Length: 101
Image (cartoon, rainbow, N blue to C red; front, side, top):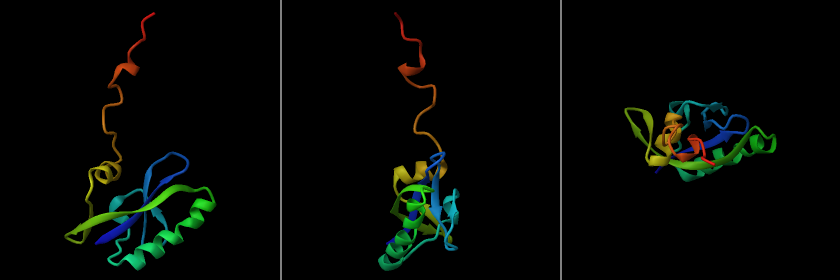
């Protein structure tokens, strides 16, 4: 099982990914892929300093596939996060219409 570390920027809320260089990237394909649980756990532990510094929030491990050397999100949630897109149009729903008196 391949894994990556993901989190959110505290300011702005963008999805980000831990890189092999020990930095963060907003690009899913820049994320480091860990083939063994011990390496993934060590990478997750390394990100805790950024939590303490209030740079990121909510780091966690995700499962990824690898196709042609590139990581691929395996869950619908992570595909949406990796694409940096909303799950529905911003103007969708009753909250966008004027509430009648």
